[in-house]
Length: 266
Length: 260
Image 1 (cartoon, rainbow over the protein chains, first blue to last red):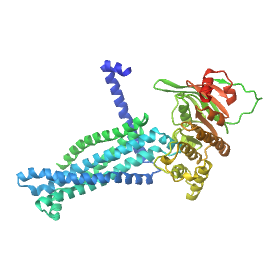
Image 2 (image 1 turned 135 degrees about the vertical axis):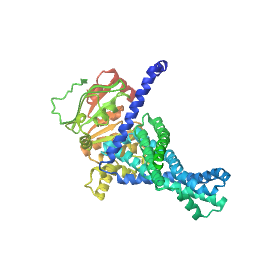
Image 3 (image 1 turned 60 degrees about the vertical axis):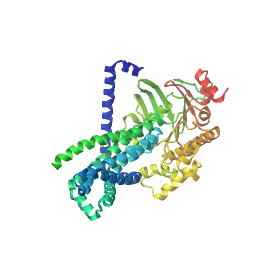
Image 4 (image 1 turned 90 degrees about the vertical axis):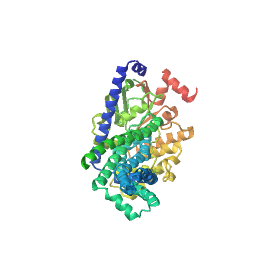
């Protein structure tokens, strides 16, 4: 009934939307603040953090190997016609490596981890919430936020840079296979050209933004799962929103981070 | 609230372990608890009986400090839980065991890990061997020692509830809170759970609040019965006293449960 009234009264509907939006933002702010508070205070759930690091790494690794390899091959293949018009196919290794290190590896890896790990975290915490497992943890005097949220967010933040480096290396391998197959370039020459145009800042910023994307995936997925409601429907919703929100925020962050890094590179 | 007059002569009541006064709780403007007064005495099993949606689960979640109340006082073992800090509440929770309706066992852990989870974190002075002995003892008490290495997904409904009780008992609580302990169980398993609740009270000398809509459970486990209806305690007394009253709600409960 209220919804119908709001549909008839756009001003009221807009006010309701604004109220919901800002209360949502405030809740996320409180959640992030609590994360930093909990991460700095003992006791530390070291075993759980290590377990989650293993989970995040293992869950996403096969897909990252596959997509990284294909990205390397496809990007090299698609770039060749444009460069060959100028007789500049020898620039392929450096072009591909710059694209991989600066953008493709962090972004593709983050999106895959968001899909694979983010949904899993959202669903797992959501199901724990609706089946009272989080309350049960409270009753056994264990801080569920520290045990469940802090460990998963830290695991995502630590593991994503490692996965990105791995994905970058696999992409370069894919690219090398393609370049070697077409131009018969040796791997010495390929690696020399690939790394000649990459600076320390490129690698550093890539690792740093990967950590930021990892944090984003962890905190968004945990927030959605930890605040799930409405039974099994709520669990599905939490898993879905964990992925969608993580991906949208990652794209927004990528846009901002690129501007920021470019101002350094100039 | 109407207290059913007892025929017995003046009896000295034992120490109060939980005292709830004028408790109110509403969700989105809908009143769930409307001025609840309730006392749980030492080593007593108090059954809170009510139909679905009457606010029974909300009541014990407030008592356990899992939900905040809107107004009123909840005194548990001499401490007003409304005014406790998080640390103080955690210390108090060590004395309260909670058996959730669904069991709420941690899916990713075996029965042993579920049991050890609380012990490792709260009894740091215990050695690995002592923890193992404590876990085995409690599992033996609920007759599920052979399920120690099983995952929750491998347990039946009744086993899940018994392990949930065992997990709460491993910390040796003074108070046990049971949320619908027999819900969704067949009559034979439900009878086993009822016997277990009585045994737990005797062996571990706990004081318990049992939330249920099952009259058989209420009759076999409760020393005192409180009937909750529309957010208020309608009646309180022994099973006999409550069900000898002429209240229509009580009659309907009786008719439903025993198909009279």
